[in-house]
Image (cartoon, helix red, strand yellow):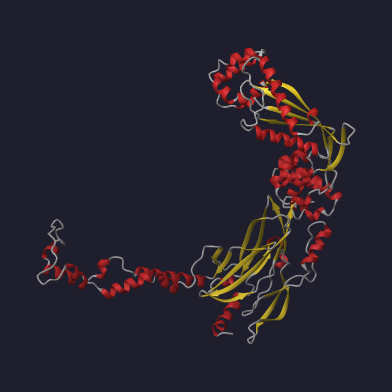
Length: 628
């Protein structure tokens, strides 16, 4: 062991007697209080013999929830230990049976995707006047990820005094740096020189209104600049420049251990000798899907005069079992009834352009070639389908309201026939018999929807349009529309959208005789919502499960914090299962309806007694479980 460490060990051991007992807050009990003092120069080592975590989890699973810690030989014990001069390690010499600390297990709840864990860091009052600093560095283990948490520094008064003394010495160093350049000049000697050889310049000392013409040298050829340099304290200047350049170096020299604020949760001095320091460390984090357990490791070190003296062994890892309402979900597969119709109808539309007053299909006009190719592809898919048979395809070509309705009707039929013939040419013989035509003519219903959705037309235009809509004669109606101030806009922007061709596909399913067939299949949407609930994605679960209004929907609302909505669903559900009664009790407890909550909790216990252990996991149910 190095000489420096030998000198510091007695003080360290004295301070570290019961120095860092780290325990889960919820797991603390009166039996954990230390009822014996450790003799001077003896360090408290913590030895733990307990069941494995795997066995503990099996016990929890068998009980259906949380299980009280029951260990006959599993309690940590405090042992007296002495320093082995050869190895530098502590060797236990006896066991103080009455000094015990309960096992480090804790149950925490997840709410709205957040989990809060807490533990106590206990340091004895013997550190009050010590020159030591203890540094606790907790690390949160979430799955495969390690997240270092903020450090806790417990600083002795003497240690902090040395820190502040270093800062004071550095402030004194900064104060010694000259900032006024006149302090670096031999002013008295310079004034005598100016008085004798530059009297006009010297006269400015008493009368600043005198501004003599500058002149470069005196009778002896000495310039004022040279005189200033001659009477400057060059040694003092060099020293001052050195100080400016070495500010950082001097800071490191005087301040051995700077005060830190980054990534430090607490840095405090014990200011009372009445008892031990107990700092409660609380940490929140966002959980991840499927997370059931997290652990916290604790690394620590002892420092003296800014230097690390030694590391103290990490207390046993703190283990937290996470409870989520999603574990109450009903994971049964949900089915839905699907009605399959024999007759199937589908519809599409094509913007096929025609020349004014003409019915011939010009493939080279606009996007006609592309649109006709798309319709042909739709027909090809139906022809090649193994499930569907095309009964007929009805083609209907529409016209804008311009011109007489009789002319538009004839034009509509002619255009429909032209499109039908064009499609028939694209397929082999026999396809043309499946294609029929129908009259669409002036599509006033579509025009009504276009006008309603348009934001360009003025209120006057809309008023005239509404008045014209009362006219049953299409020709008179169109004449009234011409009085609209925005008629030109409507004719150029809205009318072309009426000149389209509708394609109605009429099909039936192959091999199906009945008009309807009812089948049962898994409700994939519902199961997706259940998965979102189990993965703690509550917002998505609520949106998917909302329409179902069942137990899982109520659970999703409760998990997302919508307690009133959750209860509006639950109160209409029969008390069929223990979990349902338990959820009712939990939601009612949140709504501060304690009497009703207690009644449902008792009902849940009658159906499933193990839910009493589950109540220890949920903060809303703790009081009900204790008082029942």
